[in-house]
Amino acid sequence: MPQNRAARGVGWSEAALLLWPQALLGVVVFACFARAGWVAVLWVMPFALGLVVAVPFCVLTANPSVGAWLRTKRLAAIPEELT
Image (cartoon, rainbow, N blue to C red):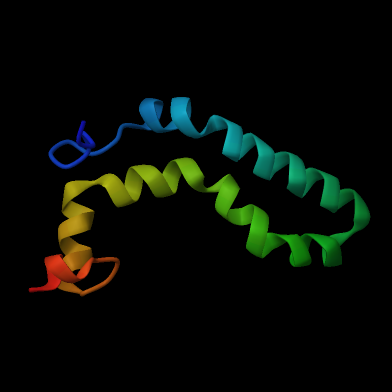
Protein backbone atom coordinates (compact mmCIF):
# COMPACT_ATOMS: atom_id res chain seq x y z
CA MET A 1 0.00 0.00 0.00
CA PRO A 2 1.22 3.56 -0.65
CA GLN A 3 2.28 5.81 2.19
CA ASN A 4 -0.58 7.91 3.54
CA ARG A 5 1.34 11.11 4.21
CA ALA A 6 1.00 12.76 0.77
CA ALA A 7 -2.24 14.61 1.38
CA ARG A 8 -2.40 15.05 5.13
CA GLY A 9 1.10 14.67 6.52
CA VAL A 10 1.91 12.78 9.71
CA GLY A 11 0.48 13.84 13.06
CA TRP A 12 2.45 14.16 16.27
CA SER A 13 0.72 11.21 17.94
CA GLU A 14 1.23 8.96 14.91
CA ALA A 15 4.92 9.88 14.65
CA ALA A 16 5.43 9.41 18.39
CA LEU A 17 3.71 6.04 18.28
CA LEU A 18 5.98 4.84 15.48
CA LEU A 19 9.26 6.50 16.48
CA TRP A 20 9.28 6.44 20.28
CA PRO A 21 11.92 3.64 20.45
CA GLN A 22 14.38 5.68 18.39
CA ALA A 23 13.78 8.84 20.41
CA LEU A 24 14.11 6.96 23.69
CA LEU A 25 17.34 5.33 22.53
CA GLY A 26 18.76 8.74 21.64
CA VAL A 27 17.89 10.15 25.06
CA VAL A 28 19.42 7.13 26.81
CA VAL A 29 22.61 7.39 24.74
CA PHE A 30 22.91 11.10 25.52
CA ALA A 31 22.34 10.42 29.22
CA CYS A 32 25.01 7.71 29.30
CA PHE A 33 27.55 9.87 27.52
CA ALA A 34 26.67 12.88 29.66
CA ARG A 35 27.91 10.96 32.70
CA ALA A 36 31.31 10.82 31.01
CA GLY A 37 31.43 14.57 30.42
CA TRP A 38 30.60 17.23 27.88
CA VAL A 39 33.39 16.18 25.50
CA ALA A 40 31.80 12.73 25.21
CA VAL A 41 28.44 14.37 24.50
CA LEU A 42 30.02 16.35 21.68
CA TRP A 43 31.43 13.15 20.19
CA VAL A 44 28.11 11.30 20.31
CA MET A 45 25.99 14.25 19.13
CA PRO A 46 26.27 13.54 15.37
CA PHE A 47 24.95 10.02 15.97
CA ALA A 48 22.40 10.40 18.76
CA LEU A 49 20.89 13.79 17.88
CA GLY A 50 19.13 12.30 14.86
CA LEU A 51 17.46 9.75 17.11
CA VAL A 52 16.29 12.39 19.57
CA VAL A 53 14.73 14.58 16.87
CA ALA A 54 13.17 11.68 14.92
CA VAL A 55 9.58 12.56 15.87
CA PRO A 56 9.67 16.30 15.07
CA PHE A 57 11.69 15.66 11.90
CA CYS A 58 9.09 13.13 10.71
CA VAL A 59 6.20 15.53 11.34
CA LEU A 60 7.97 18.46 9.72
CA THR A 61 9.18 16.68 6.59
CA ALA A 62 5.83 14.91 6.03
CA ASN A 63 3.93 18.20 6.01
CA PRO A 64 2.74 18.81 2.42
CA SER A 65 3.44 22.55 2.54
CA VAL A 66 6.98 21.98 3.81
CA GLY A 67 7.48 19.41 1.05
CA ALA A 68 6.31 21.91 -1.56
CA TRP A 69 8.64 24.57 -0.16
CA LEU A 70 11.57 22.15 -0.23
CA ARG A 71 10.79 21.27 -3.85
CA THR A 72 10.80 24.95 -4.84
CA LYS A 73 14.23 25.27 -3.23
CA ARG A 74 15.31 22.03 -4.95
CA LEU A 75 16.14 20.42 -1.60
CA ALA A 76 15.35 16.87 -0.47
CA ALA A 77 13.77 15.95 -3.79
CA ILE A 78 14.16 13.02 -6.12
CA PRO A 79 15.04 13.66 -9.78
CA GLU A 80 11.44 13.02 -10.93
CA GLU A 81 10.22 15.86 -8.69
CA LEU A 82 12.69 18.33 -10.19
CA THR A 83 11.55 18.06 -13.81
